[in-house]
Structure formats: C-alpha cells, structure tokens
Length: 307
Image 1 (spheres, rainbow, N blue to C red):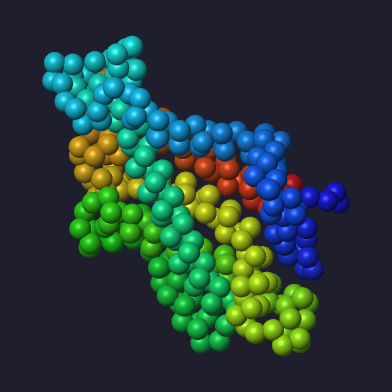
Image 2 (cartoon, rainbow, N blue to C red; image 1 turned 120 degrees about the vertical axis):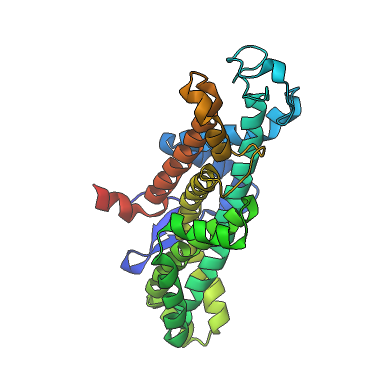
C-alpha cells in the first residue's frame, strides 16, 4: 500500500495520521492539493465553496434588497435587471436566493456541528466508560431514533413554537443519535486495540487515553458524518419551512420560498419556485457527494465493501 495521509491499524481500524507537513506551515497547501487532486472530492467541494461565496458576496454587490417590494414589477420573468425574475410582491428572487443561501448554509453548519459535539460526546462516554452509562445513554438514543426524523423534528418545532430557530433545534435533536451511535461503535472497537491495552498497562489515565488516543481515531468517522449531517440538516430545514413550521414569510429561506411560489409556478411563473429549488438541490447534492467521497477516502474499507 502506498504511503498517504491515512494508515490502517490492527483490526483494520482507521488511524487519522496526517503527514507532518500537514501539521506545520505546509498543512493548508497539502490539504488543498489533496482535494484538487481528487476529482470526485474536488467537484462537490468547489460547488459548496461557490455556494458559500455566492451567499457572502452576492448580497454585498447586488444592488437590490431581498425584502424590497415593488408591486409594479411583480412576477417578471428572468431578465438582465432580475436574473431570476421577481415574485408576486416584486421582490428580486436573485437577492432572496442569495440571502436564503446564507440562512441555509449557516444553520445547516451549526446544526451539523452542534449535533456532532453533543452526539459525539455521548457516543464517546458510552463507548469508553461502558457499564450503566452506556446502557442509559443508548436507551435514550434508541428512544429518539424510534421516531421518524421528520415527525420528531415537526413535534419539537410545534412544541417549542413555530419558527426557524425552533426548527433548527428540532433538526439538531434528530441528528444527535446518528453521531452518538457511530462514535460509540468506533470507540468500542478502538478501546480493544493493542495500543490502548498498552496505554492501560503503563498506567495512562482514562482521560489521557480518551483524548490522546480514542478521540483522534474517531475523527474520520465524525468528519464523514458531519458532511452527511449538513446535507440532511439543510434538507430538513427546508422541509419544515415548506410545511410552514420553519422560517416564516417573508424570511427568504429556500423551503419557504418554494411554498410561497407554488401557486404561481402552476400558472406559468415557474421561476418563483424553481430557482430556490435548484439552489437547494445543488447544495444538498454537493454535500452528499462530498460525504460519499470522504467515506471512500477516510475509510478505505467502505469502497471495498461496495465493490
């Protein structure tokens, strides 16, 4: 096997071992070359980067506000003045899609990261301490997993009050068991490896073993799940807003925009719903492709099982 950023430990365990250059001055350059050198990794990464730049730059350079109404210009087809047309209130859809990108990317990232922190900590505790802690924590996770994700997110959102913030809370709760289960599984596997037994033998404390040896080994699994969780979070937020439980009009969230424009799309003004739908589809597809490729890169066993 050629040398690279990943090596396999005993029992085919994954060891996240970046080259020394990746931890020093050339780390960013190494990471960039690694991404660009893999087309299946570079394409979704570049698409997400482009979407991020669109969300940041477009509202700053585009001369129209996402909430500015102009009834005289309502339901205009895409043109030079309005590249994505206007909605029923004359609001520029290009500006609203760009503002919606900010909402979706920021909230999707926060949901995925917070879910990873909470779920990862639960899985780490359950997988390393075991015993009663493992049993109690996993039964709670099983109880959450017993509900269909969308139904659970809807219940939490309705219970806390309809809105984008509560929809984000509901989406985070849905993701936590995913992270917890995966991290627990990895932690159980890792704690049985010889180098962990050796650390115990030389008197290393449990805290040192967890943070020095176990945590770095579960990071590849967590990185894969964060990218998948981001895609699911963006889609779930849009779904809740589409159902009227998330972002409320006139907030330019993609799911809410699709719902708001459905009636007009059916009467020929297709651009009102199509452009936010395309933005949502592009973002979720790119994030899913990135997650899929990261799984192949960080866990070589997965590509073997598929083949």
